[in-house]
Image 1: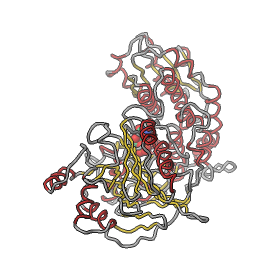
Image 2: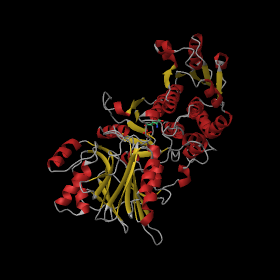
Image 3: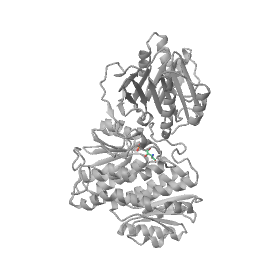
Image 4: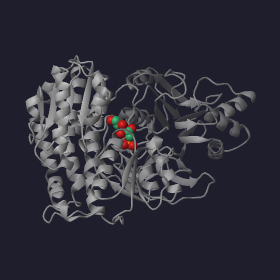
Length: 600
Ligand code: M6R
């Protein structure tokens, strides 16, 4: 999705700060980029394509000024062209605006502005904003008032930042799209930042102020203020970010995805520390007062939905009625909520579909809990409570370590909310999980297996029970980074239709853990695909004899059924990663995808 960076107070270095910020934000997904600097005039440089193209254009004609904004655009209204790239300007080029989100009433606004003589250069919804500001200026408003009034006329979702030729400020506002300020006023210099995401300015400061919906910020070289759109002062806390800037680098790996897969032992330790007691085997979920909920609904999208499916199984196994919903399908046909708990599972805490489902649940009177990775995210702030998965920043578009940490967090939550004397084995396995994941990483032969099937036309993944969401996740990872067809199925469903697709050209990854009834039934399904000449890759802890029917085995250590899901998933992450790497795909930025999906 689109990214925003802004800074004031950097003198001649402003352009470098903006370009660095945009490079850091590129993981969000983009197809054009631009910057605008204000210094008595407004200089705009923008290009479709990669940030490197923008850098070349900036070098050819450097914009200057101590105040600037920048943007990476992920096309929604109009194709990725130079004209559609942000920032957008007004008629005389004295106002520049960047925007994330969607302005729903832009067509009506544009018609009115056109009728008043304004001319438009792009297909975007955003371009109405600088013209609205221009129109307010023409009516005599000062810069701040003009931006406020323009923003008040917008319907839809937005994070907006504007600079004006005759002002030394950045003005910004948000509704349903994140914006965070960076505060660096220690010592003898003051520098302030603005971004859609903390990594954009984290190398300069760890002090942040999260804007809430309906708030308006003004950053100048001297100070920063936050008010409501109506102009009432809001006292905002300054928070400290707990992770280091190095955590957003590749640390020698070829891709963020590889780094993040390998960071899973540490991410899991962070998630479990202070929650799972190493010595007495107790689980603590802090001061969350959700003991024995009457029912649980989980809402999520994508990878997080797979975690939600897994979480729902955990709650049901603990005796609590629980259902996982795709967040974007939640409002339609969802049973009425009594006093159930609604859990939003979301890495970013900014996914529009998930936020919308959580708001719907709140409006119907449910208590809401965000299971999220991002402190201060919208989900964390809007829900009644937040339970952080503590995975550290995840940059690769493909979610990896955050999925593992979501599963660990949901285990902890279930045990903490619905304690039982049978938890001891699960707690012991959770305690061992980081080391077990490390063992999988150290010993995996997934690269060699991936090599065997690079020419396959499709990949299938099957699993039962807790391994069913892992099959879905294995297929999602494979398809999003390799661009190959991949599907995950509940193993028992195979013969009800999908088996027709199975041929000698379609490897089937079968997740078989333990040796119980479920494992035996899945082995039955493995025999069915084997009889159709499909190559079989068994992901197994060796408890059953599935390897007898497999062409390849991806081994995991023996653990509990719950943690086996995390371990099996690591093997599938590696299989997808190595397949994509050998096919030369742009692993960290798969085509058409974005890290954080902030539009519905
Ligand atoms: O930030 P969220 O967890 O709410 O994101 C939801 C999905 O967009 C996300 O899980 C997506 O499916 C993954 N990045 C795919 O790897």
